[in-house]
Image (cartoon, rainbow, N blue to C red; front, side, top):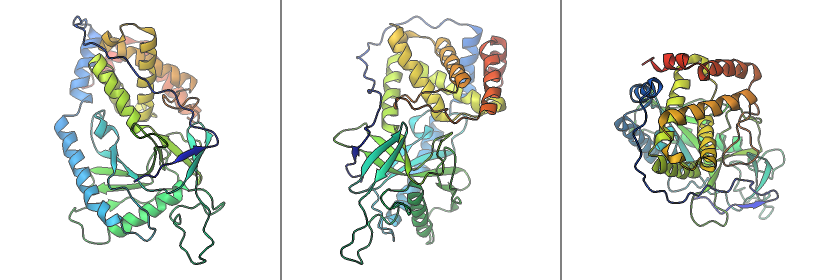
Length: 377
C-alpha cells in the first residue's frame, strides 16, 4: 500500500494527459491491397502475433508464483510493508508482446511512509525521507531497508533493491510448491533491467520492481510510479539517489483509447516494427519502451494534423512510425511522451546508433529491401 507522496521543490513537469473526444465507429473502405500491405499482414499473423492462449498461460504462471511468494515476504527483518497485491506490467500483460513470451514485469508497491520527492532533472527523482529518530535511543530506523548510507536523508533505490532481494532469498529457503524457481544473481548497474529477478523452470523470467505509487492529491488512477529499475541508456545507472519514472497506467489508457479509435491499426503497426527489430540482428539496440514512445508521439502528431487519422490504413501507420523512428535515431532524440524535456536516447552510444541509422535508412528508402525482410517468415 503506497502512502500519499507529496512533491516538493521542482514539481513533476509532465505533458497534460491526452484526452480525446468520443469517436464514432465510421464505416471505411477496405484498405487498398498493395504488395507492402499484403506482406505486413502476413508478417503480423505469422511472425509478430502470439496466440492469446500462450499469453494467458504465462500470466497465470506468473500470478501463481507471486501469490505463493508474496505472503512469505510480508514478515521480513527489514519491516518493509509491501502492498496487498502487486501490479503486473510489461508487454505480456498489455498484449503487445511479439514473437515469444518469456518475461513479466512485477511492480512491487510498498509503503514508503511520510516521504517527499524532489525532481532532479526530467526523468529522475529523489525521494526524501525523515531523519533517523533520536528518541528513544534504541528505536529501530523504519527506513533501514533503503536509507542512503552517505547523506542519511534519501531513499536509495539500490539499497531498496538489495533489501527486497534478501527478503525473497530468505523466502525461498523454505520448501515451495513451485519447482525450479531460482533468484538471479544481483546486478548493481543493469541498463534498463531489474536488479531483482526470478527465473521459473528456465522458461519464465519475473522482473521484481520495487515501486512507489505517486498518488499525491489524486484519488483515482492513472497514477505515475517511481521505480528502482534503470532506464535503457540510463545516464546514472549506478546512482544511489535517483529513482525513475514509470507511466504504466497512463500507457494502458492511451493504448486503449488508440485501439478503440482506429480499430487497433496503430498497435498492429507497432507490433510489426517491434518484431522486425527483434528478429533482425542489424536492428538491435532499442527497448520496447522506445517503440512505445514512437507510437505515442506519432499518434499525438496524427491527431493534431490529420482530421481523419482514425481511418489511416496499416501501411500508412507503419511507414509513418518507421520514418519517425529513423528521425529519432538519426538525431538521437526521442522524447518521452509523458515527461517534457526527457530524451530517451540522450545517452545512446554514437557508434552503434550510426550503424543502426544507416541500416534503417536503407530499409525506409528501399521498399524492395523492406519487403525482403518481411518475407522472412
